[in-house]
Image 1: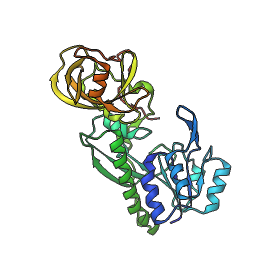
Image 2: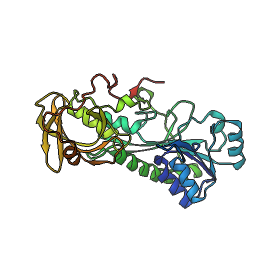
Image 3: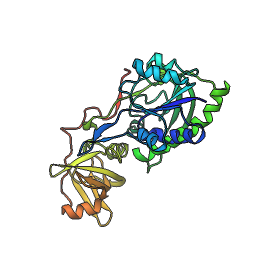
Length: 326
């Protein structure tokens, strides 16, 4: 099948790798290189970087829907556009170029969690199951008819990064299974149930700030939803501190929210929440590498009763990333 792959982030890499191994895409479309990091060095996004390393034909337009982009893609005569975490909408004229249209690999069980942050939102909501949906793009965001959908359990150890990679691998497997069916004409779709639809939004910095005054289960869900990147954080002595790993305990809170409960040598420290204490095991101070919470405690020289900023005056008034229909 003659395909064009359109993506940007790490999420699309397993699918692109599988395509490259079997039938390399005619073209890889990705976002333009951008200045990033402390030194503002120009960097490629993961999909563009992979395409360059593998010698794939790469196109990085400022506007994928511009006349120049349409002409370039149309000239290749693709039969299918495959998109995965690209970051821009594909308008009607572009979607109509290939014979079989355009499909998307979405990391949620649509119609739940449409939008930009489906993995983080599932973790924030305490879901026990998520999955991948492959659907045909239409004019509405993540609302097209579904080709394939598979569930995946969320384990207690999963955080955003771990679950992201599992779902990316699942999406690649599903894509390779679906492509022959599309090509043979045996693939079927079914419409989404709009009554069940929920929507997510992009992250804001305030969404990452931990509010220790909330129940421990909510604080833990927020830590998991944003680990390892970008990382939920609190404040220690007015400096941001990312909290990257934590565990639930059965110990009731015994002091003010945000205060340190127990120091557990070589493991970490507990922090009082609204109802229970959380055991923090991995952190990342600003400008430094990830470290064991026990090592941070030794260096910071704090003891029980020390206070992390509760964040009550800073935390978003919306404790989730869900929003109303756009």
